Length: 241
Image (cartoon, rainbow, N blue to C red; front, side, top):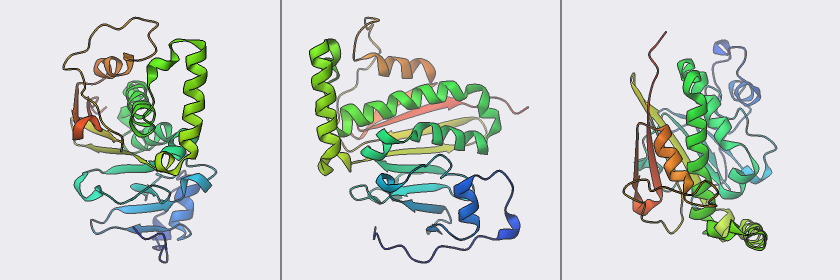
């Protein structure tokens, strides 16, 4: 994907509704690098490291948001079905509340999600944290079992965030849904891992290993693909009304 952005698409200003948020209003005014892809989705191109806030970057009419600071920001997007998608660099994912932004964007489109919004956020936060820490940054969570280990973990995290080979690796969150359920996928560019077939008991004070078990309790179904680099979470949608 070329970093040179063409003239932004001009959205019909007559269709602008109140409450779209700052990015939505800018997009509707034609002041964002917002354009439709070949499938008609409105895509916002942004630079995560230089963006002060991404809180409402997925407000309508935007459906996809791509961080141009990522390594190969468009790689594999043609094979990732999603009605709502954000791809952000590891640095941007750490510095911004990407998960909160995605959950709010989903509830904005499907207000009935509000009743399970906490479950979605908790599961998505665990999945994204795993993608960042264990995936893209290749950190060993077991280091956090002691004070010295926690200090070493924090120092290693800061070094790798500052290293473009790690910090610019993308984290992708893609959501798709129908009338009965929602699928959310989280993907990283790490080394991958072999997930356990079942959730094994984990000590309450353990510093690693709890995330996958928690995700399984919050979702209807969980699956890992791409060598453990993609987690797919399925949620049942609340009945309308």
